[in-house]
Amino acid sequence: MSGSVANVTVTLPSQVQPILESLTGATLDQKIAHLLLGEIRRNLGACEQERLELEVKYGLEHSEFQRQLEAGALGDEFGYELEMDAMRWDDLIAEKQHWLRQLRLVKELFQ
Image (cartoon, rainbow, N blue to C red; front, top):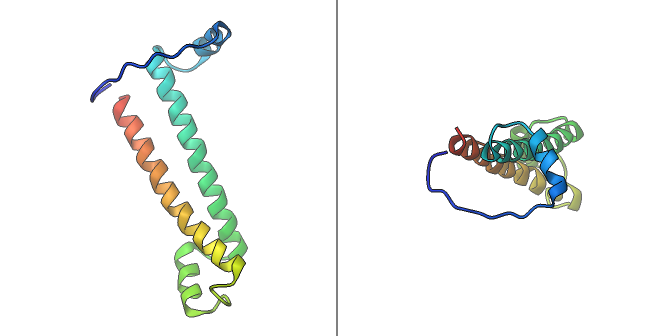
């Protein structure tokens, strides 16, 4: 693990020990990295699923949706549902970038 290291004490019930032993990784650091990577990938998957649902709903990719929205081709861009979908879609793109940065960071730190 590169970079500065913080010592963190975690107290877990003894029943958790067999679960930890069954996880991927030889060391506790590796097991934690594996858990972090899994959670980050789950969050990325959720973003992608929600983005796909919007693409299916409108039959468009985000860039084309934005173009048509600005041109008024989708209706009133300030209509509640359309505006909420547009904002959520933008948020999903930002959220995906956030999780990709986190994924790269964890991979770098635990190489």
